[in-house]
Length: 90
Image (cartoon, rainbow, N blue to C red; front, side, top):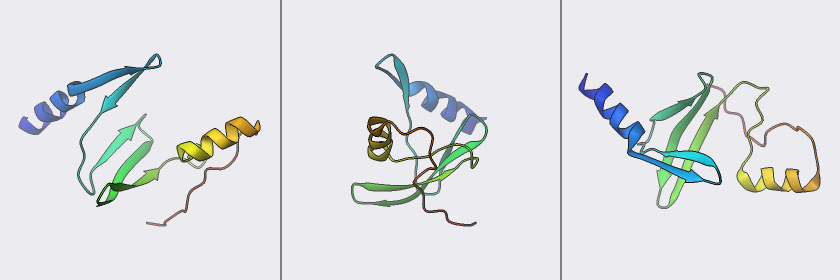
């Protein structure tokens, strides 16, 4: 029960309004994860200095892009394209 209470408190800790959206700010350690919409999992793969490596597990039909790549696609007027990911098999 203690872990569930901690997770609930953590989920309520920091929510910020950003351009009409809410941002939930979470703390995670290496190999911990978050789940989005029951089918997307973000895993902390590595933490080295000020860089964090994330793993994204999502259905193939969900495009996944780094923000700068997404912005370039959007600015170029392209429609949906495949995500810019290097796939690692489990």
